[in-house]
Each structure stands twice: as structure tokens, then as C-alpha cells.
Length: 219
Image 1 (cartoon, rainbow, N blue to C red):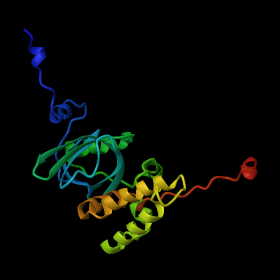
Image 2: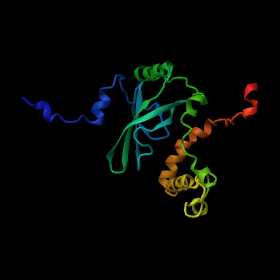
Image 3: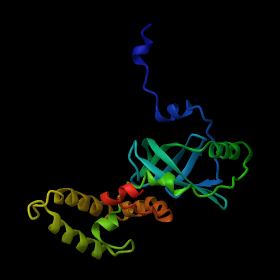
Image 4: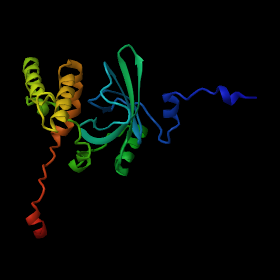
């Protein structure tokens, strides 16, 4: 009579099954972030070992490869869970995906035909340029050794520590230095960060300097 009171909360998998886009498993699509569990026109499910490289709600650029084709899509992490010892699984929903790309993925699932993708224009990735440049924050190169990273951290931490630097912006810089060090000092976190940052390296974002006030009327 009161069965609705004991109704269990739907699991992430049940929520996935209710999505409007049919999912399919395939070995034709690969993603550097993790192993592809299944994919649909609206999203993808990945699995990997260690700590999950993303947080729920985070939007990141995902690179998908099919044969010789490659495309980068913005995707939001909608759920993350553990499915085994040190094994994570994350479901991503594609953001602002082109209709032609949705059709390509659907067609690949139904017929196995490999699409002819090209790189997404940099303007679609520019919105996700907020991925921090941890190497730049510490002032080291991407191939820097652990000892160089440690030295750079101590140097910048002393420089921007609020107790030693009265600059109002020092506290924010100090927090970013600590955040960068926490990621780069851990081998697993650093490897996953490098994979995420690789997409941004392949699509450099042009720097736009503000137009001086006295020249704005000319433009």
C-alpha cells in the first residue's frame, strides 16, 4: 500500500539506461582519459585505474579517436563512482555537440562505419581554457624533474606567503602554488593532468591583449 515509501534511489546505471540516446559498446572509439565502456550520441562512459581525474560537474575537453580520425568534444562529468579496487568509472554528457557529430557516433554504433572526423576548431575549446597551467604557476617546464618541481615550489611558496608578502594578490597566488604542487608531486595525478592538458597544447589559444583606451575609437 505504501510501497512508494520504500522505493530505492535509482543507481547511476539505471539513470544512464533511461537516457534518450541508445548506448553501445565498441572497440572502434578510444579516449586518452580512460577505457571506453560505452558511448552514445549524447555522452560516453569511461573507466580507469587510480584516482578519478575529474570531479562531478566539471567540463573538460575529451578527445575521441576512431581509426585515423580524431575529434575533441566538450563534456561534463555527470557521475563518478568506484567499480572495483582502485578502479573508477565516470559518465560524461557531451556539451554543445554538433548534430553531424551526433549522427556520426550513432551511425558508428549501428553500422560500425568509422567516421571521418577532424579537429574541433579552437573556439570550442577556448571556453575550457580554465584548466590551470600548473607548470607555469611553478615556473618549470613540463618535463621538469621532481627535484626541480620541489625547489620551485619552496621558492614560490616563500615569495607569495601572506605572512611575508603584503601584496593583496599574494594570498591567491600562494593558494595556486600549493594546488599546483599537490598535483605535480604525485606521479599518478601528474600523469592524468598531462593527458588533460595535452588537448590544450594541441590547440593553442591566442592571447588577446586589451585595446588601449585612446585607440578604442579607431576599432
